[in-house]
Amino acid sequence: MSIEITTNIDTDNKDYVRNKMIEFNLKHFPDDLKGRYQELKLHLVYDGGAIIGGVVGEFCWNWLEIHYLFVEEEYRKFGYGRALLREAEKIAIERKCDFIKLDTLSFQALDFYSKEGFQIYGTIENAGRHTHYYLKKDI
Image (cartoon, rainbow, N blue to C red; front, side, top):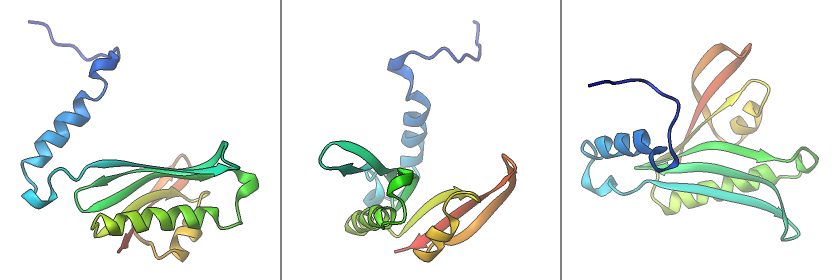
């Protein structure tokens, strides 16, 4: 028998590790939280056409984790990021989430998230020569 580590993964098996981890985790969560995994994708669309921003995340059991929130630079400072974040929060509340978590780098949006009620629960220094912040907001 030969076992090896490879980066050559076919499309049929690209989600194997994630799916197996979810399967394992489900054995340890209460029944009322099982089956609560779902992706979140919101787009900010200009005149019904071009995407100029959005939110990508996932609902996991009793929280929403935001992986990405982005608004094209020329559309920043008009409240679109806030609107996207608040729409994500509204959906999280509807889905009975207890909190939202996300992360940001020191050159990104720490002040923005702080103003929206997020609290820092951890940091990593020297992450690409920046500080990496981990934030949470109870809802």
